[in-house]
Length: 315
Length: 297
Image (cartoon, rainbow over all chains, first blue to last red; front, side, top):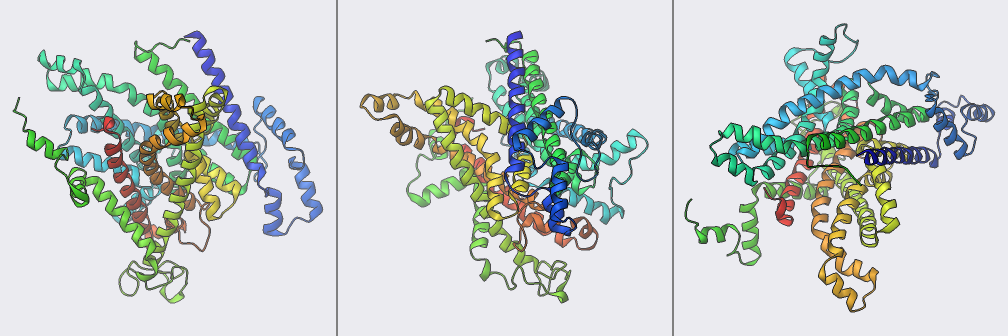
């Protein structure tokens, strides 16, 4: 286990290093940096000023030097300065993390709350009308774009209540904030719960066919006991893996939903930074997202070993 | 335990099916949801092909007098702020969605299959390298990767196709690789080697065709994601540029404002995206059941 852990951690670092190179190169191979944008759009920068701007931002240096500067800074906790507000990128990012974390947490909570029980129901009543209805609902959940669902929710609010649940000012109390965030979280969580529901269903169906389920039934255990104590507990492992996949899946939903509901979170900030070609922020945010996703996947792997005594990581 | 009705079981399994129409009828009865999906996809394809014949207005011509026209009358689904007909824009939008969806899925599958086949068949350090690279690409969410690529490449249909296709590669490569690993050990591969066939020909002639079934299943699933990602990119203003009518961008044009004033501008494009993806997903599920009976539930 110890050696496995170390190898796994080294692999994580290698992956993150690779991502940093890919993102860095990707953002630079194509011509067009912030100096070009300012130059083209406003005509406010003369060629000499443009050169000065590029020198100031370090854009005139060779790409390898730029990369080393960036990575060296990252290692020291220096995320660089944003071009737009000229403040340290970290100062712009950190205050946006809590709201996104709350939104993602709520969405995941909704997803599990609805996804797991409905998936179990669907599997237990396989090929009944209920199963078909639940399957069509989960498939449509995967087909609706989250941003459209968000817009539909806004529309329903306008039509029936006459106001829009937009996150303008941060509510004072945590509870009020969570209530307000639960509306966009529902838009993100619907898609996530659809995925959990589908995978819970197929995982349950797999387990329900096992011999030990028949044994449990034969010894006279009640239907509920069989479904929840014997089957779900064994089906839960693959479901946990899905939560690892969800981490990456949720980010996509967060990006568009934060935009629709005007939530000042990390995900919307990424879109804004991309529009501005604000390299330091885009790089740092993408690395931040990659770190979160890679870490979640690592923790899920560890949880897997902890929950299932049959799985032992050795070399 | 009831007595097994062999005739009924045989009929259910398609034992008595003859001819093309018989097979079609059997598939329709056996996979009603899949058939519905195929029908939806087919209608959207037909809509895209016959776009000029089923629309009365040009999708890009503006008309100040029709600005924000309500649905009904001359404009079946209303008109947008610039007075462009919604129905026309949705019909022509199908062309964009399908072009980007099919284009990026094909490019992604082509690259993914080549990588997966090489890495699975030849193994060794190449396989190790490719696996690590796929790990890296897969650690970034699909939309994030597509966003960064689309932004870096700049707005054009071709660039959007590339931006969406690259993030699709790892999934395809993984599936094809694991399939190849299994197929590589098949007796017929050994036989081909025994008669002196060279490795590249074996990989292309004997292994590749056998990965086709999982590829079709995967490609259908990817098509749905590709359409969704294109919509999200265009919604965020980093996808298909003007003047092409893209379903995603139709929702971005100050959609939050039209939620109050012109709901039809919000409802119909979203409905089009959802229907297209829903149809693709239904079809994909049925194809998976047909091609991969082990996963059938």
